[in-house]
Length: 109
Image 1 (tube, rainbow, N blue to C red):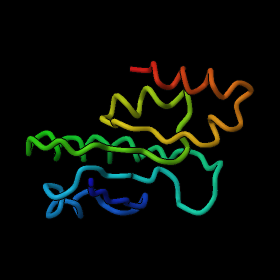
Image 2 (cartoon, rainbow, N blue to C red):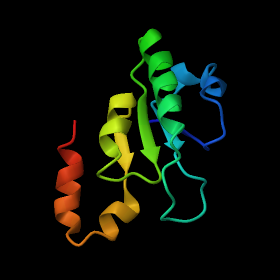
Image 3 (cartoon, rainbow, N blue to C red):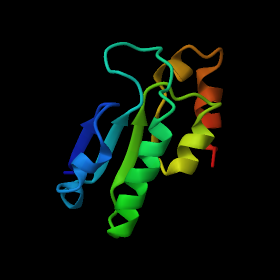
Image 4 (cartoon, helix red, strand yellow):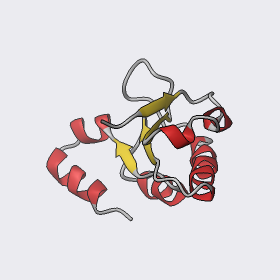
């Protein structure tokens, strides 16, 4: 069993400081929860970097999952900021070729 925590766009990553060593995954929402199709909130990239730094400085194996507004176009920046897992609902399900889109996302670095 693994433990995870989800945070909304306006939750500071510092709020995770006391529990980071107890969890395996942080699901960082990059849109306001409620409905699909929203655009990625740009300041999320800075929050990913901050969280990645906290994790790395402590030598932890916590994964960062990003959920909301993930596209083939912004995924490389999200990965570069330190994300491990991308949730891409509309990007996949509204694609002309969902299977090709999944493959494209899986091969990004």
